[in-house]
Image 1 (cartoon, rainbow, N blue to C red):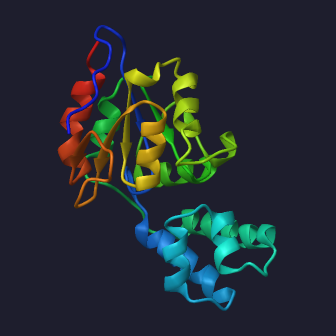
Image 2 (cartoon, one colour):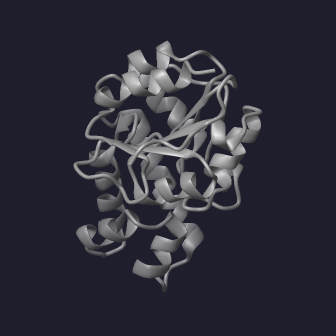
Length: 216
């Protein structure tokens, strides 16, 4: 599928998901959820499968309905913060060159994680940070709601139709589509449903992302 048309002559913007798109954090997420599950006497594999599809509070409601969700969340946050300090992270191939090549003010991060963890991971992987980061605390509705991507566009003073969303997860793809934006999928073997374009790796997508950003 080809990209939706955008308005010629107007500045273009790129909105990136973080985990799975710019930073390879799958093993970290699996480890954190595994430790959390074991501490609560639950099966790590089963818990992780639920966590992949839902936000933490929704995960707790499914896998530990008899536990205090705020206590569960606090324990998870402690594990995640420790992982940011001590875990092993790597940026996807091409991420650093791509982000450094984009014009400052023309891109943002839109994540279901929290900003302090994103900043920690970016420092550890050497990735540059944009001026706009929309995290879980910045919006009342997370992905797949359009709210996170619309919030990022508003902070950039960008029209949704002039924004390109780069995602790896179905919930993020739906979020971008519902926001009325171009959505490209990366780092997956098959294209997430609804994406306008798909690239198996971020490296392959990079020249096309730069070409989009340099329009207008």
